[in-house]
Every structure is written in C-alpha cells, then in structure tokens.
Image (cartoon, rainbow over all chains, first blue to last red; front, side, top):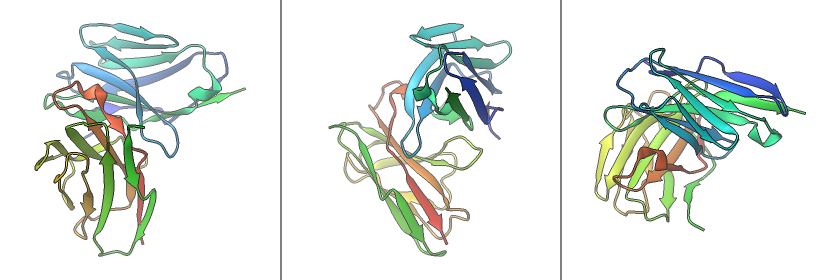
Length: 111
Length: 114
C-alpha cells in the first residue's frame, strides 16, 4: 500500500508562472520529506527537503510547504522555466530509515 | 568524474532467463541501493547494502538477488522467479550513516523481458 501519493500524474504550466506540485502521505511517523527531480534517461537528483519540525523551506526558486495536520506537502516553483520540465518525485523517510517514493508528477513548462 | 554507472542502458531477455544488472560507483560510498520503477508508481526498494559483504531485503526483494563483494560494485540479478521483471531499474549510493537525502542515483537500466 503506497504511503506517499502524488495524485496528479502531469502538470502543464506557462513559462514564468508558478508550478505547484502536491503530495499526500498516510504515515504520521514520517519525519523527513524530500523532493527529487528526474530527467528522461537519467537518475533522480535531490532537489529540496523539509523536516517535520518546519512548515516551510525555501531554496532559490523552490519552496516546499508542509502541513502536518493534513499530511500534505507541496512544492512551489517560481518562476517556472523550460529547464524545469521533468518528473518530480515526492519522498519520505520511514521509521526504518528507508525512502518511500510517490509515483511522480510530470511537469511540462510551455513557452 | 565521480558518479554512478549502470550498464547497459537497455537490456532485453527471454522469459525464464536470469539477468544481471551492473552498478558501479567511484564516490567511495559505503551504502548502495537498488530500486525499481514501474509506470504510475514510485521507486520501490529492492535491496540495499550498508557495507561490503552485507545486504538487506527491501520492500520487493522476491525474485531478486544481490552481492556486495566490493565497495564500488552492487550487481542485481533478476531471476526467473521474478513474475514481472520488465521495469526500469535504478541504482543509488550514499555515505553510510549519512542522511538518506544524500542518495545519488545512476542513470538506470530499462529491462524488457520478451
């Protein structure tokens, strides 16, 4: 049973606008969350993370928000650029220290 | 350049044959991992190894085997017992004891069983 869920398989956004990617989780014991970015034919690369003691973490154009009561996190990309077109995976670290991944969201940034 | 290599990029095998996927890293990482990615699903952990000559099963280890005879190498064998072997396989490595977000991924191998 998947404990990390990304319900939107794809997202199309215009260049310069905001991209918002959503992620929900079911395990309240998760205490660290990560976003990975993946281009075709390449492995995922780490993008940004957030600890459960925070509700926001910002790194340049990327901001991750965590709502623990709703078991929901989101990734905001502002402004979106063509190079942001990729698959984005949400992940959480479980109590055994292993990564649990969501199914991914394909982002397409259009001119 | 330091990194993780997986070969080959594409692999085709007939049903019932065992096949071994290669993963090599020159990052001097102690820990290595194998994941499987299927359409519409996240990466799922098959096996991981924290140190040479030791490895543990992940969430979906059935039908797979691994070895860790050298620090830089962590080959994955997909056996004929794996019911749905066609998938995209990703290898990763990290420093032992380091935060898991330090996992670095290889480019992956797409295995197709005919």
